[in-house]
Image (cartoon, rainbow, N blue to C red):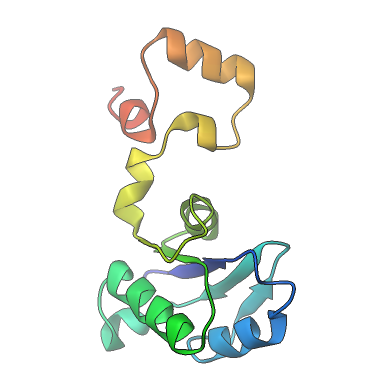
Length: 132
């Protein structure tokens, strides 16, 4: 079974921490509270809800029902879910497919490396993946 992780990024996490944890518990028992969001394992929800984008949408819908704001991403790795959710703190659902569209400067890559990639015309994850 594939692993899947959800990440909720919200500027309101500090003031509504318990509400966000309660929300995450509706979807998972494996929850980690980080400085700017909540990471939780949603492996197995694919059978109940559907593809990662559908899982993220369901989480976002539940957030909105509870009056919570933030962005949600679901991906096969925790790092990918965090990177995707951190792109926007508005009510946005991000799926793994959007990872390839991320600009490299938004990833934790040193500036010297970004400069080399830029000189080579490589500006997104998709550009990087296109290299044989």
